[in-house]
Image 1 (cartoon, rainbow, N blue to C red):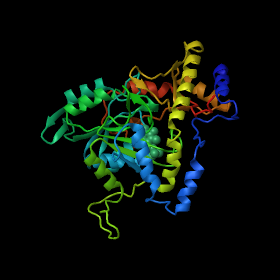
Image 2: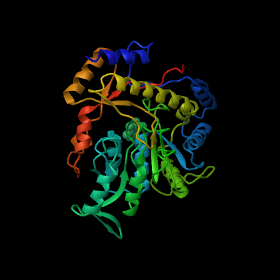
Image 3: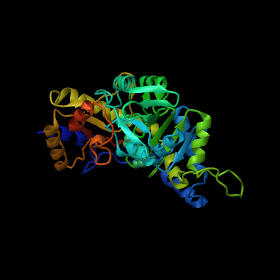
Image 4: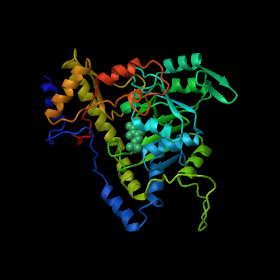
Length: 386
Ligand SMILES: *Cc1c(COP(=O)(O)O)cnc(C)c1O
């Protein structure tokens, strides 16, 4: 029924017997740098590759040196970022139902609760319109911050997520949140290299969080990073993620409770080699997306919709995405693709439907529910340049 699609996907990845969703590519100096890290004996939380990785990443993001901290993974990056903006037990943090569980877990680690606002159909991310409506009707500004009227709890932060590399309308979210005094932590875990109005995603919010897990566009094995716009915040984040140790040649002292979240040098070595290839990876992924887009504008166009970047977004197309007509079409598609040896994937179950977060406060989440039933991610690994 979908054979033409599977033949097309196989033509994108002609050398692979089974085609996975997203594989890492180690085509650069990975082995050389990792070996150097081993030879140096600095394999752990100190070493030149960690500093180099942070500088390289800052440069890629177009931000000054010193504003980026490399950490052990994207989840702990979110945790530390939310801790740094002051999220505490009993607070509320706004996010979207359509996200990976890490976004919500990081909120919960601090004893706070996520509060869910729907996504927009064309960005797959937090809806500015619905956010504004919620804040204006259900919250009030007070000297201590933004209060949610019904629960009497404080809304301490907002975490929009750039789904599959596509940008949310981040400038609008920033304007709305600013008027209520709510800091923004951007979950840019999936969107390294994506731009909105020419500026890198992850650099719009007060803080921005990245992931370098094995399935992301660039990997360090496991890894993450935190960008802070304010240099004093950046220093605090660095301090917090390195056990809040007071720098000293030999003395060991800590001036607050910190986290052992620093990225190991071994991982950073891999990451440096990967970052060197980011521009090529982005180029390849955008070309693959272009091919998918062309295919779906001619074939299956009344049954399948290919999700493209919005007007102001230049997406990294981390995972190419289609919308099937409904849940049963989607299930048929997934079944057939797996049978054909092509690993496609539905979107995550909504956070509002997990046992952990089902009782959290939520607004109308109709668009998220529709997307949950219709989204399929297609194989999106970088291919050899041709
Ligand atoms: C990958 C991801 C993270 C963090 O992932 P780690 O595996 O902890 O690095 C967070 N949020 C989203 C949306 C992600 O996709």
